[in-house]
Image 1 (cartoon, rainbow, N blue to C red):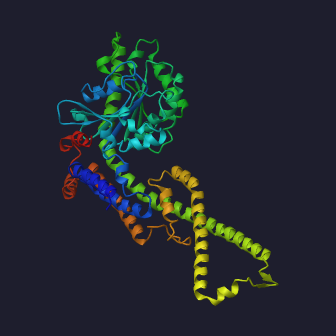
Image 2: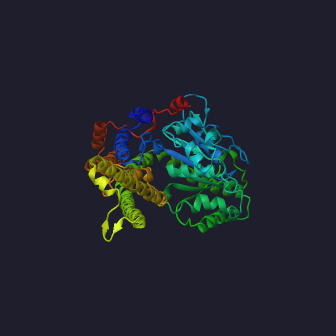
Length: 512
């Protein structure tokens, strides 16, 4: 195993050590991801320094997005019961802040490299992604990310991501890249808007990115749209109109379903003199806050199913998307090689015929060059000539193979982006164009009976993991004894905060 392979293996063992105590079901999924890795290594979808297991976050993720001064940090501080984030009416933090639990009594702030170098966190190797979209910015990872630890019990077993105030006009491409990245990886996304800005129509770019680009997703249910600081509308003649204006604005972006919450921070509320109005606002606030907090509390359950879902989707993507795409590319490559060979060797034969005709080597239909008698009289010269001809022919053939392969790369990259396949589809295709691979091969490199068998086993394992999770979190029969017996047999701990004694800060510190 090379250095890169040992490095990724070490990271996976570190992950397994933490999951062994935190969730044995997910510990088993790491082994299943390793099975997928072996298939991907052989087919070329992954390099030896990569793993499917490091392409997903393993801890429950809640991301908080929104506009400047929409009260995101105040909401986080109130939820944690700890003044962790700076607050203010202007932009007070220009970094994405990943917050996790720590047993220490005081909070700590760690640099972005603590996230960039730890595969358990959602920004693993984010510097490389930033570098691809913004040259030179990858080295400034600390300018984009920071890790904070907090002793709040509400953080135990989950990760909270606070984004800088969202301003689509002013933010750089690299920051938008990070925003899209955390949206993709999060189990729950809280999208905050500021009720103190009564003209949502003026925030078209923000609404487009945070609403229009998310409602068509197959995981749209994880988005909660929150109109914060609604207490500021209590002094309006018609406070309901403020809410209606925002609902219309979101509806214009296509958001016609899903929950729309209106809340405000009880500790920083605007005084409401009218007792009836104050009670009505408080009842609505408390009900919405309770529902939001319940969703945040249940995110660990959603995380477990998400990881198993990613495992199964990755296995299916390999078989149903990646392999067929490689086969199609191989078919087009073979056709282009055959046509290229026909063209090149046809032109070569025409050129040789023209030269020989010009040199007078033809007597009628007989080819009689002056050197033919010397060639036929010397077996060694015949062998050398044959080797020379074969060398030229093979050289031309492999040149055609290479050109035909390169001609397909651009379209294959676009196809890979469209299919959203995990892994490098172009690298896997190029593995099939190596000199020792025949153009008439129909099965991609590394794809055989054993690979299909291993893939079927992974999909079966994924189904078993779902059943185990169902046994852990559900009990349709209502028979408590059966559930407890199954849980003891599987050695799966109850999903309660008391049993989740994980601490992420120490590991993050070691990586920093």
